[in-house]
View 1 (cartoon, rainbow, N blue to C red):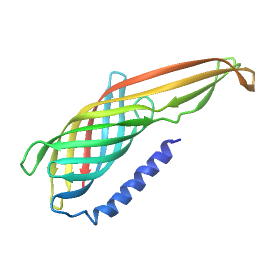
View 2: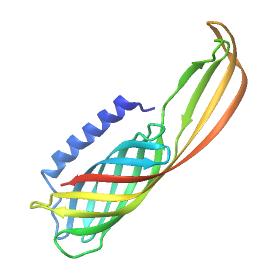
View 3: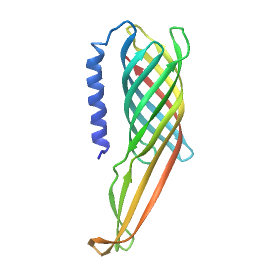
Length: 199
């Protein structure tokens, strides 16, 4: 189970650990360790929201592969875990690239809600679902392998909700005999703009 404060703590810890590893980069002939940290804006017809990502992995020539964790605040706040794969498509110092992220996202909003007449408690549980993100970007390189990243793409997350309503009396709830259970599936399509720092 995750909530906002724990997810932010996880992001801070990962960023701190990867910063330590970045000071001791894996130096081989072509293999390098990189950490990518993004902040982004998600936009859809239903409105806008923010997102955070930290991705850590290795680069071999023009290919990069890593593992990421993030915070997606669109509609339902979720914690995506994903594999990131990207390819640089130009040979100049500053490079264009394409990327794709595939994984799953978790949401732990569990709540008990009361009706207008305070007769029935409503217990909602959200379940994990598919997450992916794909797009194009531009890498503005600095010395010592640091780079500023700009990217735009399409992102999708799926999440399901189980809503259970129980028999009850005013201010006295009996969580033994549900009146009925409703199941909802949400598929959320969004556009995303991100700015990141790679080191």
